[in-house]
Length: 260
Image (cartoon, rainbow, N blue to C red; front, side, top):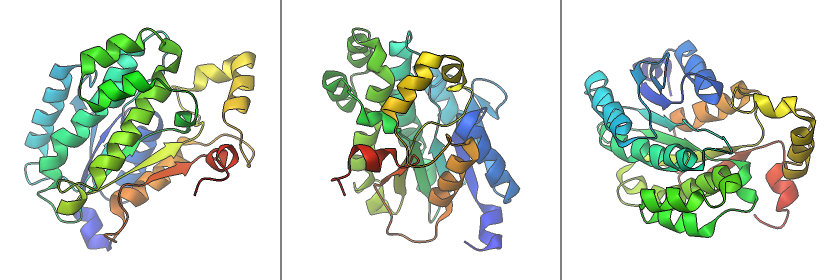
């Protein structure tokens, strides 16, 4: 998009206070976009997307701050904490859906609007199909309760559920059929505050090598994910929709070489 149109674009990013969200916010602001950040602290909108009140507050404030609509939305807020399975499902899946669905009316006000979710290569690992079914059915309490029985798989389960929802929603009349292009990125291991504790534990470093085999050396920086999010929020065409793009150093190709 030309410089004039870029300068007028307004985007909202959840999880803007750290990691990929923070890097994306900086990148877009440097390009002249107006960015509305959402996070638990240090953001334009302070909201806990793991709660119904926090989600409603985000939507209310976004409507006030962007009454003419949004050109782009990134559902980037997420956690990965093994002993918080309920919150992981609430934030990573239901918080992301509340962001995308709740802000869709604002996206519909603007031409060439785009939305992006952050999935993960962790979906290539074992997940809980029963929890995913409850997520897709919209049963938050039941999904959270079931997840407490297998807390170690909460993160990958939440991200697989999100990816499945996105693939179905993106091609619906409400999204792609209305010109609102919804896509996702699936990062591999990225060096963020969320993953930093893993690198301090030798056993976790070895586990990462096993679960995330790569063709390249070194894990990604948040700015590398921000580059892809930037593209998905601002590309000019109208044909890219419903895609989950693996930005992972080759992990997906190594683990699923026969899937194209």
